[in-house]
Length: 535
Ligand code: ACM
Ligand code: ZN
Image (tube, rainbow, N blue to C red; front, side, top):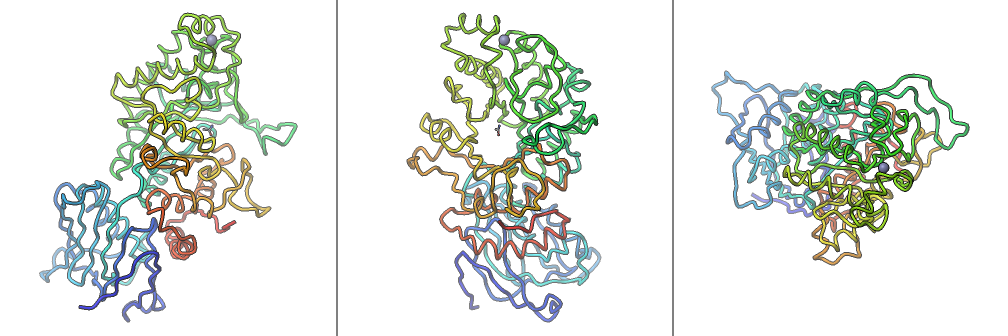
């Protein structure tokens, strides 16, 4: 058999057989994120009702995924005695990267090889993208289709491939959270960073502190328009809610079934005004405050008295029972030291612990929480402010204020996750079109996300090993609806998936745009409200 070898980057136009002439004769292999290696071969695998799925138990999730996906377009004929063309999952322990896979399509069978269920699942996400998009929403009517013969060998560039979602400023249904997880799974991302607590709302049920749910989860009204529009105007409507522990356990299971880890974020010591509205005794002044109704950085933060640590340990105990992730995100960003400076308890803490100043007090705070979580066999992630006043011994740093924090942390041999605002903040405008929906500011077009290299060029090869990966952040001050979240996330998440999965040195924006054109029909089928403006 002759075959053509085609190295990436590539967009392949394949002539479909007559049976598929409705497709106007051509399709494109446009898998996103781009696989490392694709070799296109001659011929097709005919997929009709005479197929079967064969797998070992390690591959049950992947096998069930593809079975269900195919059933949205073609029903397997269980009764037919005709020989069936197999889709086989085979364990191949020689594949070292646990997230890697091989996908081989020849006229007789489709074979997926991986050393773990995770690799096999990613193979099915690539296979899925070889199907017409009407499989996505059950509108495929043709009863059979030709899949091109090929061989794909693929593995991720980075081990941490994440998306974040802030549910404090605006909250979204569990149905939507699962949809968001489905988006991540489709793009071979493996981490959902769930930002659960904010000044404007506490969203996680904590049984020991019911006022978190009765008081901290509700704000009396919300700012209308942009923060910079003065005077501030408010909508006068109570806003809020929280996720029950059962809801969150359900999400964790849903994510786990898609090889996605949910990392909860419980913010401290800042962004905690909603807690202080319910439990003012945890602040320095003890004075009542309200759940914040506008955006920003607030001075009322947790006091460093013992009572705060008792509270946080209790809260974390319940968090750990819901979220089995190795990492727990403890925030650490944007904590003004104003209250600590004039608080007797905090000043006594500084003196008793021999600390130099309030920055070292923040280090004390974070390190103490880290010790607690380490004692429960968990690790902390914190925003890059946790570098100020010294880094807690085992902390992973999420670098958002540029890359300086990442560089410093990696040089101190700490793991790093890259989320610099200029490449990773999907709350920034993606277009200069004057009709763009209101956003926080900034300008982050698709191409800029695409060209992001998570490894800061200042790092040596050795230091760059501490960079685990990157993440898109979705702060929702200006995203009141699920549709608006989708609009801000798509298509930039597609570019981010390629930043974290595909080989950095094979990136080609024009090639990505070609594949994106093809991918848009999939987004349409999934009814995703994506932006069509590229700059
Ligand atoms: C952040 O954007 N405050 C981490
Ligand atoms: Zn205090």
